[in-house]
Image 1 (cartoon, rainbow, N blue to C red):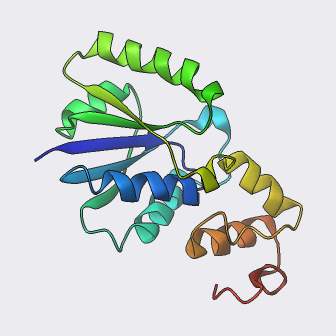
Image 2 (cartoon, one colour; image 1 turned 90 degrees about the vertical axis):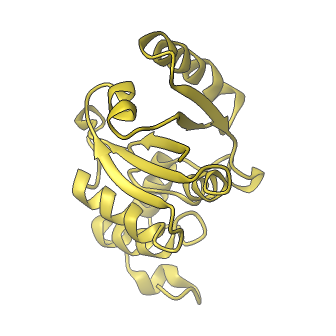
Amino acid sequence: MRTAIYPGSFDPLTNGHLDVIQRAAKLFDRVIVAVAENEDKSPLFSLEERKQLVRESVAHIPIVESDSFDGLLVNYVDRRGGHAILRGLRAVSDFEFEFQLALMNRKLNERVETIFMMPRDTYTFLSSRIVKEIARLGGDITSFVPANVARALMERVGTSTKKLSKGVDL
């Protein structure tokens, strides 16, 4: 069974992340979305909340599961029997940092490969940080995140769902 690990903070999960997950599910037997416990980033959602939001968002894809980890990613990949680390690239600016991470992970565990995937071009501008900022400022985020994430994010930042739904069933 070929297992891919897709790590990230997912604070929150965006449609760009979901696009990468859905396409990876066509290439692997199992995809684990591994939510990182990186408190240095001061996440808006707790680790458990982020895992739950991912779980709900991928429930329609049977081979995808949500989990969390801390410590070295390559150690987590080993524990979960992973074969590849998935990394999303939105722009060329992402590549240098991701390339360094991939080389370091290979040095730490040469058995684990890193695979770069780009989201659809309609999502290349998306980031969790930008989505959170739009929500804080009262903008419509419904086309940027799954519906369950939009509800949770709007609740967290105190934005009215009626104001943002514009015909979208939230």
